[in-house]
Image 1 (cartoon, helix red, strand yellow):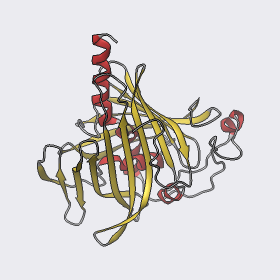
Image 2 (image 1 turned 90 degrees about the vertical axis):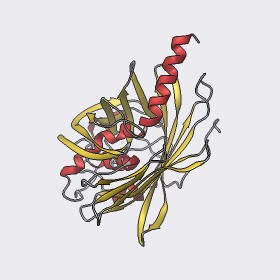
Image 3 (image 1 turned 180 degrees about the vertical axis):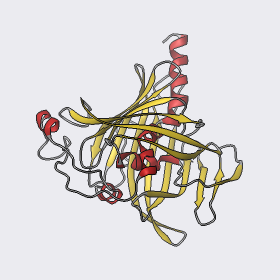
Image 4 (image 1 turned 30 degrees about the vertical axis):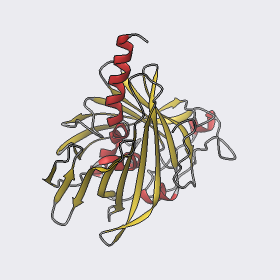
Length: 312
C-alpha cells in the first residue's frame, strides 16, 4: 500500500469513527413537526433472510405502508443491527446497535439505546479501537423519544464516561463533560438531543415529504441538522436480506456540527419501506469521496449481542 493510500485510509477512519451513527441523524429532524404518534394499519412486514417467508422483489415493489412506525413499536421489535463502514475500497470498521433492558434514572424508567463501534485493525496505521455509546431516554406525551443521559465509554483505552451529556429539562439546561475533561453548562433548546438517539428519531418520518430541522448538542455547543425527506421509492440490495429492498431516501446537511457524533457537509440515508423503517445505509461526504455505512446483519427478538464474528 503506497503512502497516499495509507493517508486516505487513515483520514477516513479518523472522521468516520466520529460520524458513523450521526449519519443516521440525517432523517430524524422531521420530528420537530411531529404532533403525536401516527395511527393506521401497516400493510406489510419486511422479512429478513432469518425469517421463515422472505418477500420477493415484486412484493416489495407493490406493497405500501400506510403509516409511520411509533417509538413503542420500534422498541418492542427487539431489533439488533450490524453495519459495515467503508471508505473507498477499505473496510474501516463495524457498528452494532441494539436496545438494552430498561434502567432507572432519576427515579423514572428509561429505555437504553446501545451502540458499539469497532475499527478494522487489519488496516495499516489504524489499530484497534472500540467505543461504546449509551443513551437513556423516555417517550414523551407527543410520542417522541427524549434523551435524559448520553455517555461514551472508550473501551480500548479503559476510559469510562469519556463523554457525558445530561439533559435537565426542568431547569432548561444541558450539562456536559468532553474527552478533554472540560465541563460546562448550555441552555437547552427543545427538542434537542445528543448522541445516537437519532437512530430511533430518524425512522419515525422516513418516507414523508417534509423539510425539517433539529437542534443537536455536540462538542460543547449547539448545532443543527436540516433534513429533506422524500417518498420516492428505490430498490437497493443489502447483505442482510436475500432480495432487493424498497427504500426511502433522505438527504440533508449539518450546521455548526463538528466532532464526535458530528460531521460537516451533506449526507444521504436510506430506510426500508417496512413496518419499522429499518435504517439500511448512510453516506457522508468526506475529504475524498464518501464514508458509507451499510447494514450487513439484522435480527428481531434479540437481546444485546456481544459475539463479533472474526473480531476482538
